[in-house]
Length: 359
Image 1 (cartoon, rainbow, N blue to C red):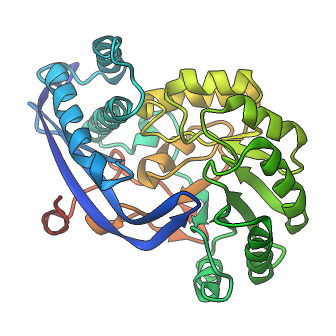
Image 2: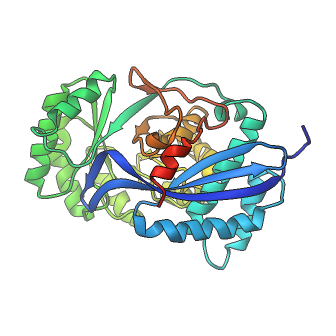
Image 3: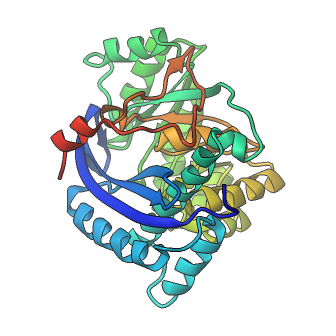
């Protein structure tokens, strides 16, 4: 094998996949998963795969165009992810890396790392110096009705999950109390429970609700205020009896560094498609380790499992299975844990499913 593999072509394909369980949040519903699939093929015959979640169908086409533009910058060059990301960073200096540009960069980085691991016949976590070990996962729900959704919650516990996250903030504090209290009654005292406000409150109201919901033994209160309101997060953290979790909307390691410097959270949850792919995650994991901050993942469970396996302060893997319908062998859940598998990230596309869900 040559010292460096060479990027031959990059294929970009949009799909919209029905969610196994539609997610309702305080700021809208997610009935399906608009994804953009990335295949990086090399002249040596190795293909790396990744995907990014576009959140809304209206963002799919612009994200495809951004990926195609950035692919043109790195095509024909060596598969050296850190250097390729530096190159794209320079190309985007005047535009900035937030939003679709940052997601496109992160997606390409993931696919390049997948190429490297596949070329060596290794799982990504092994290439990064770790081992493929079981990682505790929590099942991720939206807004729930304890009566209507009781069977689904009980099914998660039966499946082995020892932690559940639900969305809150869709109504009044009384609504939250009813929902959280009802879910706690279903889960019992042994299963961990997290709540996610999806940026729907102001700091004063967030503290008020945290104080009231504390009695239900909550592990974290996630994004209680606007994601970019780091001082607001710090105010909530200072007074909340429940640990504050945030990070899915941090852009690249610099965003995480600013949040940690402002004491904006007790717990960190970067999204690999916003933190800068595999390369950005590794930097973020170092920051979390230095600050002794437990670090969980957000979405993209296939690659996140590999990255948490090499994260010193690894906490929880979010189990939100957006790409299952597209994969030949989706991640396997055993006893509430997911073990990363290779080669690479471990994703092989089901081409018939891709054709069925093409956008």
